[in-house]
Image 1 (cartoon, chains in turn yellow, orange):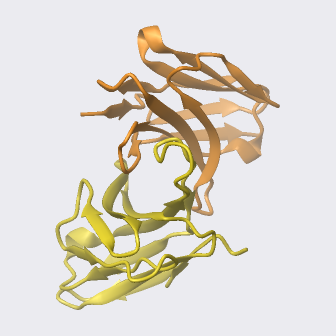
Image 2 (cartoon, each protein chain N blue to C red):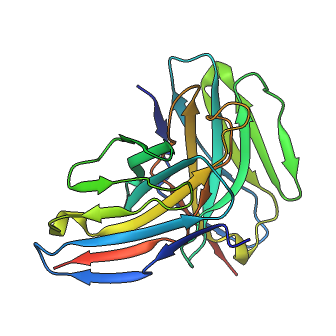
Amino acid sequence: NAGVTQTPKFQVLKTGQSMTLQCAQDMNHEYMSWYRQDPGMGLRLIHYSVGAGITDQGEVPNGYNVSRSTTEDFPLRLLSAAPSQTSVYFCASKGTSLSISYNEQFFGPGTRLTVL
Amino acid sequence: AQKVTQAQTEISVVEKEDVTLDCVYETRDTTYYLFWYKQPPSGELVFLIRRNSFDEQNEISGRYSWNFQKSTSSFNFTITASQVVDSAVYFCALSEAGADGLTFGKGTHLIIQP
């Protein structure tokens, strides 16, 4: 049981390049989400999904796209990277038993992205 | 809208001292959930505790304890007899009933000096 995995661990992009951050979980969790962590800002929600085929925006969605074709995978796409997207990105998942808000979120190890 | 405030940006103590990390939250919901996460220097996020709004009992787990007070909208975290391994950034977070994500505080960087 690997939990939540993210690839790559580190990435450097040039302004305008595109890339996809991968996230996968093997806990059969319906809910998955992406956060970004900036110095002194805590973590902020980018996008989330409550199940395959369903996604929605969080607090800071601009510049990011997501899709959820399977329960296991929830990739985050940067279509045209900007220096403001330099951050550490965390993927998380949680089960939906009881109240969705109640359940512990399991976080991946993070992806450190630098946009030059 | 919900909000979590961790007013202490950084705390530095000497090993074996007790230390309390403050967390104040704002929410209009009567049902909500509070969490604490630890982020060690290695960067991963480690779940420490969850508390729901109907359970004001304090909790103790080894050297860790949590004081939840609805009257002051606070959910403070105390480490007793701190150790160097406790050095980390600690985040308090809030989830409202039906909400789809966590609202995090900005974190408190705890430094335990030997």
